[in-house]
Length: 264
Image 1 (tube, rainbow, N blue to C red):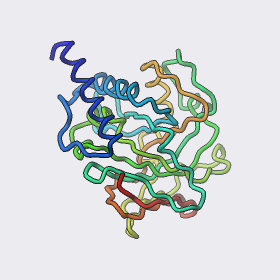
Image 2: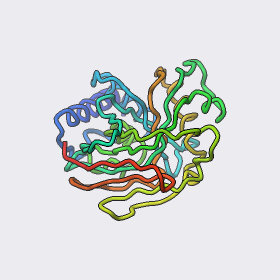
Image 3: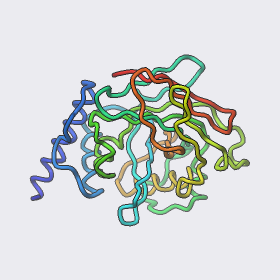
């Protein structure tokens, strides 16, 4: 593909996904030539971000398995108008009824201070020092394109990393002094356990996800801000949901957060 053709393809894909998300309708077919490289995928994401005009409340991090070269994670924006703080009231989270829809149990990290935009490499400890709160939560993964997760990480990245919402549950008290990585985590859908695991299955854990994000955003030239969230990855996997499903995430058999799935 020639450079001009590639630029046109990136623009077409970005416009198609942003338009479909605004209208709430599905895209049965991928709207262009699927990106094969991570750089092209993030170029689509960047173009789509410029089109939305919506503030970013945080970033989701997901796993690339198998890795692409040495890269084993991906990222996508979480928009302010798609973040819900659980306060005991019923929560209904929208998905694309004819697209892709799933729910994921996740640990959420809140950024305490904006990372140095010129710093390209972090240790786990340095990443951890930039966090001031850890919460339990649920990421809603949904895309207008039903096959978003069937064609590799670049395609997933190209539609905002397949994110369509975040539920922020309760804070984990004393998180600096406890090993929440050993907590059993479960996701329940319609009263049945869909998955169970600990973060021991998640590469280098939630703070590894933060390290990855800090390095990636610096490389992309995107400034992170204090107060933004990092949704650190699906602890128990990506679990498909349907309209009307009741979802509950359980952490250490004590902390829970839940929602009902609705159509956009």
